[in-house]
Amino acid sequence: SSPKTECHEKMVADVVLVDAGSRSQSSPRVDVLLALGKALDEENVRYCLIHGWDRLSDLRGDFDLVVEPRGLSQVEKALCDMAGVRLVQMVQYRATGFCFVTEGSDASMCTAFDVATDIRWGGRVLFSADELLRDRLRHAELWIAREEAEAAYLITKKVFKLQFPEHQKRRIEHILDE
Image (cartoon, rainbow, N blue to C red; front, side, top):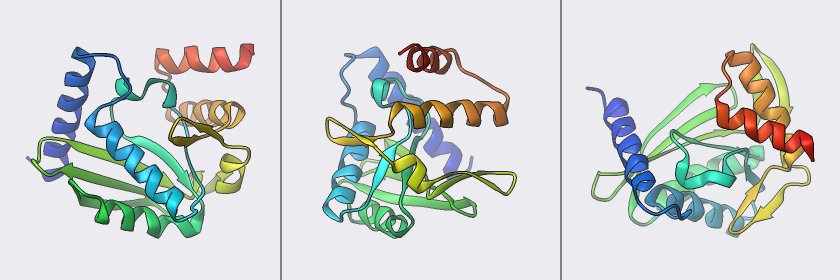
């Protein structure tokens, strides 16, 4: 199997172990996310977790982040310099979208980050970094998107992908009901 497949399998296995344990927000994957957030804060890079902050330990897959354009190189530097993990893959999949994958020092845990400086689909810019970062909120140790930006992003993403997971339907309904 490919390194990407092996890492994805480890990432899913790590999430399953977290789900089977306590429901705290802490897991090795969350620790990497928090360390990345701290590193970006120290470099005064504006970023936010676009969605999923309310269920970090339940998240399967990657963490979706938006960063200001000048911060993209800081994401790579922070992940390369982070103690206890190594950056094993960086893929540019869109003009402004990158996937970063880290592996724990014991090679048993992977964390993936979908990092974008804007959100595009079909060659169109749907959301700029400034739009998604505007009025971002501090939640514990992370910057998160304001609810309006989160809802707009989730609705747009799901419309273009033609799939809507149940937990995201509930989250959007919660935001729109407020």
